[in-house]
Length: 333
Image (tube, rainbow, N blue to C red; front, side, top):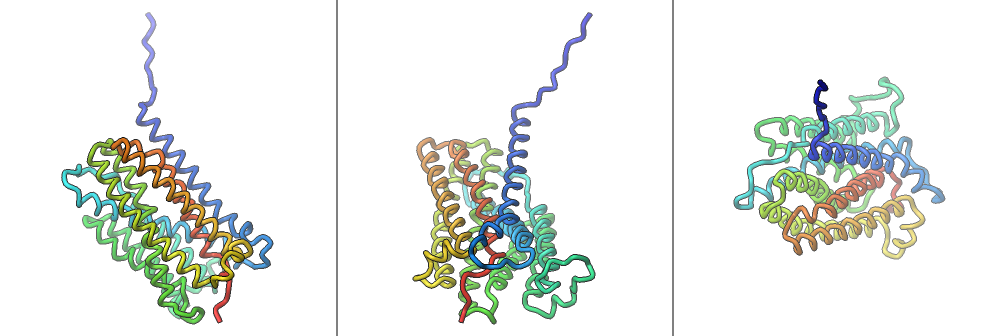
């Protein structure tokens, strides 16, 4: 008498989860190649020289920006959902503790670079941690390390919303770091522009993945459509502010008469042009998702273009990290 065969076939949900995990890993690896290989490609033929370890610095900045986006995006979407009547109380598993931990490690690595005079340390003996307190960049680097650590602890606490405050400190530190007072005309204006730009970008890039995870948990429905519609309206405002602050910041670093030339002849300009094209692609995908949502009323119908939008937003974050590691196109007089 033969024994019956047992089937160990995985459920469709499990297979879909594995496919999503593999796709996310592949996208993360591709995104990591942008800052690692980007400096050489951007600088080719420009006559400019990159700082030592520019690829690693760009990668660490990209990780830091991604960590900010994930944590702020979850808080942002949670706020949007709480204002809708009758929405389910279920929320996806939070990625904020892991994101904040990754941000803390990236900030710590960047602080070690600052502690060696903006050079990549070859051994622990070269790192002067005490010297971080003696410079503006060092103090800002330490602030980011401590803020991410505090945010990770808050994310694990009973009041995860408190992580908003240390994450805001990271945003402010990044805005100040990008505009040193001794080397730039009007550094306060530049810092305010960067703070606004970075905040809007983090909310947009981090909010959409959490929206899609929430829709999958809620299995679509009218509540999901209402949440996605609210996010789309806010995202349109975020895009407008991103565009305005991006153009203003560009004109501050590139005189209007030289913008077109510098977009193709400098590493900073080439990378900025790539970022602009990626943001334009994101805007088209967002519009496509909005049209599909309006036609069908089913938020799951907008999931395909929204997932593509997430992938392109990941590329935008990677290119943004690369942009911070390249030499500025002009010098302030």
